[in-house]
Length: 123
Image (cartoon, rainbow, N blue to C red; front, side, top):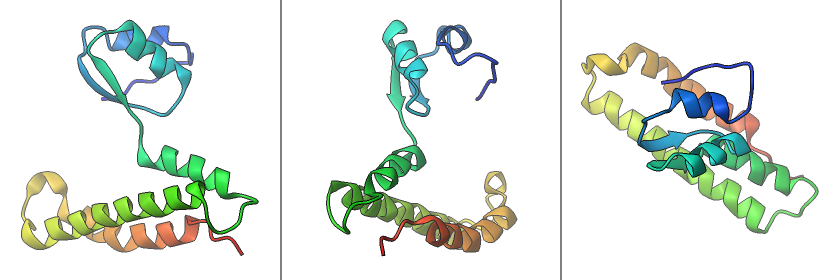
């Protein structure tokens, strides 16, 4: 479920999520931390793409080792697991209507190519 609001202030998502209990997947913007603080029952979870971006930014200008490079590598392994799971779904559950197999068949070749294109490799 998503919503869009012109403001990035916490009042908008707080009103939208009133009564919600569960995990809120969001970027690291302070707005969502405030929502979780003000509304009991909400826990935050970030997305791997945002976490990976922070590690990639930290690698710029650094040598090919260190925590930032390790972070990028670990998230890459998590992405690999995700892609393996999608391949498994295509092979074992091809008629599952909610997954739209044709979309997944187009996505699977595209995803690794995009991952290769956007992985930072120090020279």
